[in-house]
Amino acid sequence: MYGKQLSLFNSDRLHINVTTLSQQMVNLIQGKTNSRDFSWYRNQNYFTKPAGNNYTSKHNEKVLERSSKLRSAGYIVKREIENKIKVNGEKYHVCIHGRPDIIAKKNGLTIIAEIKTGKPQPYHQYQVMLYMFLLRYDSDKKIYCQKNNRGNYIYPEGRIIYDDREIIISPKEINQDFINLLHRVLDGIIKSS
Image (cartoon, rainbow, N blue to C red; front, side, top):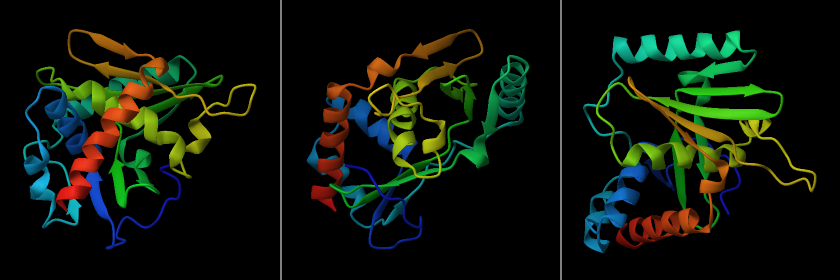
């Protein structure tokens, strides 16, 4: 469904950042979104994160700190700029892209982690879940995905790391309900474009 990776600058596709998409998923769940709310995509072919989401030195310190802990535990760790995920949909004519803070792998276990220094937001979980879902569809990142004994890719584990707690997201959370929600949001965006 989300197969081939093409250039991020392929102008015939609508480009959607994972953060924005996750916010729209939460809006739909909360009943704050209807088909008219997607119309702002109509005049934009490339939509990035909203203003105000710039990384801070505190965020960078936390990413470095967590990366160091994971490396000490034997994980191979990739950070931010190394983690660019780009997936072009086959069913939907969109390119979904983003950069998880950390992708770590050890003995077949892959972890996608987002470091959050601000107040917890409902979309954070969906942001990580989108990265978990999309990782295996990005041809450059597929290497981080473990296969089961039937040769099918297994979703990685997700983590949201706040100052005072860590939330673990099981691969089982990437289920049909999640995929249906993603499709409903993409349907709304495509219909309004």
